[in-house]
Length: 386
Image (cartoon, rainbow, N blue to C red; front, side, top):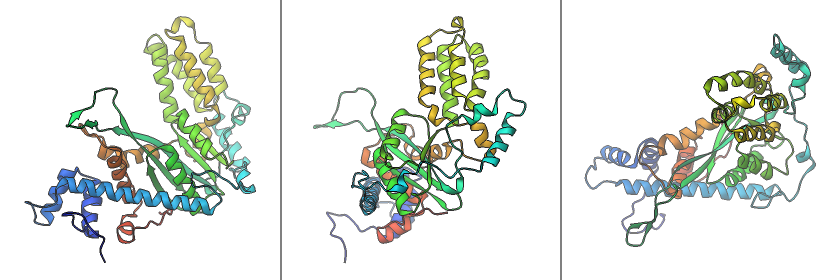
């Protein structure tokens, strides 16, 4: 009736896991949670130690992530993929490159409003390659990495390894949402693993015929990995988050120009061009900056290269805002905070890979309201939920 235990290990009830893991470890340190659980159980002396909670959380998170991994690979195999996410049977519907977009009349009305009293032509906005997807036929995905400090390794005898460059544990968080259907959060160690979970999730929820719209911070490796993993599916798009685009320009121009007054003057002219998706005009403007105002030309060249490389991902943000479409990956950034940063990025904290990813997995179960089902059945719905 019961799983064999080792040593003095005790059986953890569903109630214990709910209080200790969900209400405790995801919000408080292991030491504070140990004091809380022992106080509730009137075992302040000789109660559950914090190390036991640590190991229990790590193991429970590892088991949940292993379940998701196994289930994802089974779903992929059922849909003509190999277990590593390679599509072996490319169906005709996967090659549909034409998304369901907002009606042209509505788009033209939004463009006309954006161009009023602006020295911007309608034709220049229409030339932007990023389509205006219909939210009812689109699934929004915000995905990003979040890093926490890695624990220093110890050699035999308890001696620390040589100090060098600080190492980090990488967690990848993906937030999936669809209008009037629901949302879900996936986490894992590394972009490829999470994208594998994501593909399986899309199939399992019947979202594979939607426009898959990604929102990212513009990191080249992230964008390239997304396009590689979804090479079998044509109806996807990537949009560069406006906040990160604006931030990148401010940082690079601060380094490249002679003083903040010159920088602010150039930003006042550059930012509207980017807001309206006029990348060619923005590049031309940067190339024409007076050389006497520049202290590091190579940084200007680097910024120009950045804009050209991300041109396919930079829409007309003004028109998208007028149409009520998303321009930001802010929800993904917020999930990074809620799932990882708020708990794992305090002063003095460092984590092992298993400890960090395990705790993040438990927090994800809590965010998805899947913890009760997991503790009771060792299974997950793996479905979008309101």
